[in-house]
Image (tube, rainbow, N blue to C red; front, side, top):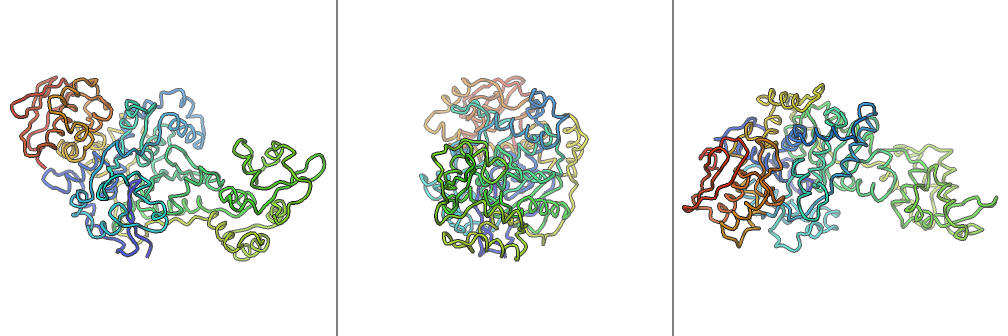
Length: 604
């Protein structure tokens, strides 16, 4: 049985080795919104806040955010930037690289615990006890006491995320941001541009590759592991998106520090959720909505990406990523017609200031950059000449699957400097990462895929999603993630607003309601969302701006959390909304032309 360890971040969780493989009580029987069904309200409410735990319980939510970003005018405005003016004439690879650079230039990676606040184990256990077995969660989630496999134990997960300064029952609300919330980080002190955490960046990439690079949705697979989220773009040799960057197949095997960081998740973690426009496969759930042929394509493409034959260049890259082995090798360089010798570790150190690399066609350039007095006139004792190993690879093809090839490799790499069995085992692992994917023993169900091929405008996308939302659950959820309150129900939005926005509550803890209202009045009366779309209270608070209706709901959040039994209501006229509490009214000007929620929308 594969390991089943449950640990957030990147959204997603893994079971412990001692737990049963599938333990969830949730299944995708709740298809469309039903205000009288608590599970339906909870699920649609989760589409608003999109915390890591919510995406784990309701995996289709992640794709609802991808579609919300594709509907966003912000993303379509990117196409008007001169940076994308010639993208139609470019190859798919160049379009992807162009999109990557735009994201690199305009977004930072953010994992600040204070951004969206904290919750507690008890609160989350109580909330999700009806969806996933509480005992399993308590015993197998690292933030709930489980220490996990050696990898997670070694990195000390609470200290790694800065949680060690809090009581052990405190855990973060890691929320996935919409593109609007990501761009709005520029309004926060210390953020010169937009920002987002890894799940947000994965969702942003998936949407941007469709809109700016015209990559078909069927070729973009989102993957979630316990500590990370990334995408596989299944074109040619494959490309991984990794936070703000992309990793080509060649980059995966280059042994640099950047590729080492990109490799961590797939080398050390189990993939818990895979999804594309046709559905998802979840490590815990018996039911999978992605067609099995799509999943086979993904699995095959990912394994091809993660595997290569062992060449001299791969060996050189392996040494680049294993600096302790470098002092067992030396490099020879012809200088003034004579051979000169130098420690391998010195040459690798020179790579940091050069575009040239050991092991490829640029190596002679790198050696020419090194001062002559760094070289020795004779071979260094007890060191292997890399040129001799290169000669072996020139004459021999080494497949990681061929025992005879591996035996020959061991014979040529044998040396007293290290244990050749261990080194070759590590080299083979470097050349072939075997991903731990959800198993295929699922109940494969049929869900209509989201088909945006041929749609060339934002308006066409929205029109299409509206046309299929009654039979495609993720399209229906997308309008809630999109926050369009003319197309989405109020009740889930308000439930999310009053139950999962702790930053505005904590930030006004010692301030009377009148002063909270004044602080909100002083903020620019502009929403980060266009038209009838709505920000949550902590988005208003964090970014210091909001429409009057958003500010009013933010004030209500503070009041309701400080006095849960207090009577508070929202009313208003065209252009103005009022929060009424204890015979006091707090009026806010609004340009959101929305019908206010009914009184029953506040009951959940």
